[in-house]
Image (cartoon, rainbow over all chains, first blue to last red; front, side, top):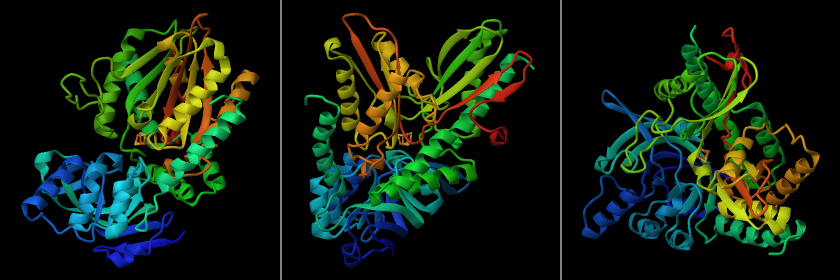
Length: 201
Length: 296
Ligand code: SF4
């Protein structure tokens, strides 16, 4: 297990150094995207329309933040991770299209995303569910907000972050997926548990 | 001061304490889990949780963005005056906490999907009443997070399978929940009574501190057995693998119908928030779960 601190834009070369179980902190630009923002970004890509910012080398955070506006500045009140599996249907194409390097969320992602990460060079960083204060502390400012018509949680919030983490690298760019490994082990353990408790499966 | 005002002030303080400060027994269990965890990823997650808890106290902010559905448990002394005013006080306290702590508005009309914006709505906050002898009023708040609520299960088990059926039911619930309820979790297990009663018992069991064991030694043994079993799953903190999936199992029960074996498992997440206080007849207040200097 190693600890890495990367600044955006993050290169493919840097990402390839990471292995599952490593700890990563990200400094620079991070943006939030949930289902709706993923969908719209991919539609724009297909139509050849430019996105509000270049996403290459950035970190995307699965998060619907609570944001307050005071005069002209937005401040993040709370920004915990949301469950990433909802984005599984978009993420492989998203990684291929935009070359984002770090996907941040909770609960992990599936095979399609894992394969896209291996092919294009990206990782999944698991952020502790509910750890809202840790997240908010690392977010220095809101750079801008795009697509606010999607609603506050679904909009794309572009954030300036400093050492955002700790992120457990749970999917690396070498095809490893910690959540799948744990799932496999849990399945094996199930029989041992039943046996210990004297239960029939 | 009038009971309406006292109860409002106390309930407000309780919500604030609960969402900012974890009870000492939960903190201790998390620290112990961190010390004993052998999985690298699990340890990273537990450390993040411990840091987050510390920052929440330092910055006087809720430890988790989901401050839950506000649930109260009231032990009302039969001789206490104006008990009918208590629920009104709890609603006012909840509204105030939404603005002043602040806590996230979490009360949504299930038909229109409209959020009331102040954590109140039909039957919410939910209040459980128990009438006890005396004049004191004891108020407990349980802000209950949604992620861990979504994996709670209730089942009508086969009476003939007895305790073995129960063990399997609890283990399967934990396996199915996986990473979803933000483990490490606390499990409340309720048995008997009826479908609704089992879940009520299960949820109330979440209020028992982790360092207080079941008064019935046989049940205490069962709690320990189930705790060890679910921690063999390897799900670990945040589902990233490790020894700590569950911090404690609290079982309680009611007698059952001969033909039924109702059982329920209520999950609480690492943000296992609760706070309680007692109001005496003369208006003095004693905070039971948190130190008074934590009441700001
Ligand atoms: S399950 Fe608990 S810790 Fe996780 S987000 Fe919900 S309330 Fe917070």
